[in-house]
Length: 199
Image 1 (cartoon, rainbow, N blue to C red):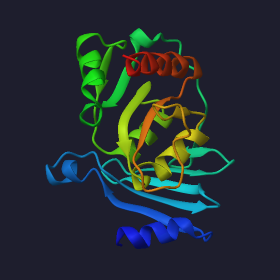
Image 2: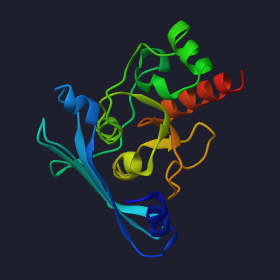
Image 3: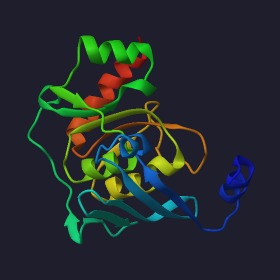
């Protein structure tokens, strides 16, 4: 669909489906089993229902606004982890961060280790299931985060952009992400991001 038509859909008050039929295309092409199908229903300017399906593991993540999130039908419950930021596994997309952040992460990381999996919707879903502790991404499109953000949010996660704004804003603009399932870790992680951004 041309960008102009996409914008018309967003500008209308009608509900719409936001589909990414293959999130993690590069992984799929390279034979790396980390990709998914992502689908969200957006109503009144925010996602009301979302599913992320991982065919490699036959895992279906799903959520409905205000009704929680599930993994293969089992509820994903909010959780707090007894870890400091220095003990955490971070999920980070380095290539979409500026050089200041790249240098800080490489030279003086505030976490134990980090990974980049390459499929945004599935990264959101894994974080919702407790697979990884903190998340940083420099720019996701609407179809990258619509379903995953809802699943993560309904699992009790905490997320903002690097500027401190709500992640989902129903536009075609790229949105950065700072997130954690654990509120204490989220506060520490967001504070570190803010400190580096000010440099």
